[in-house]
Length: 255
Image (cartoon, rainbow, N blue to C red; front, side):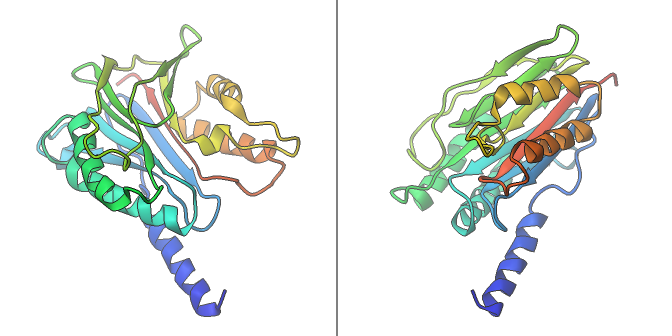
C-alpha cells in the first residue's frame, strides 16, 4: 500500500472513531458505558445513544440505544456501518416506536445491499425508567444478557428478526418487559466478544462473559466493560482481534 493510501486509511480511521459516542449519556437512575474495538483500522461494529433531552420528549429518564454489526470487517464493513448509522440517526429522532424505526431503516438499507451479500445485525433498545418499560427489537442479533445481582440470575432478552438489508418488506416485532430494577445489569454485545478464540482454538464464550459480569456487578459499568476487554486480551494470548468487538453495559442504580 502506498504512502498516500495509508494516509487516506488513517484519515478514515479517525473519522470512523468520531462516529462512536464520545461520552455515555447521563440518564437518571442508570449507569451506562459502551466501547468498541476493531479488528483492523476500520470496522463494521457500532453503537449509538439517542438523547431525548434534545428531542420532543424532553426526558432525562429515557434511553434509546443501538448496537450493530455489519458483516465482516475492514473497509467494506465500515462503509456499510456508516450508511446504516446515518439512516438510524435520521429516523430514530422522529415519531414512532422502535420497531417502526427498524422497519423504515431496513427498507432503505435493503435498496443499498440487496444481492450484495452484505447485511447488518442489530439490537435496538428503548428504556424508560419513569414509565417502567423496557422494549427492544432484534434484527439477526444475539440476545442481550440481563443479570440480577440480588438473585444472582441471568436471563436473555431474545426475539425474532432477520438481519437488516436482506428483505425489504420484513416486519420487525417489538419485545417488552418491565424496566431494570436497582442492581440489575443489561449487557449488549457483538459476536466478536464471545467468538474470539485462543491459541488452542477455544472460544471465549458467553459463560466467561457471564462470569465477568457477575464478578464486576458491584463496579461501575466503565470498569465492567474494561474488565471484559482485559480478559479478552488475556484469553487470546495478546493476538490481534479476529473480529470487531463491541459491548454496552447498563446498570440500574438508586436515583
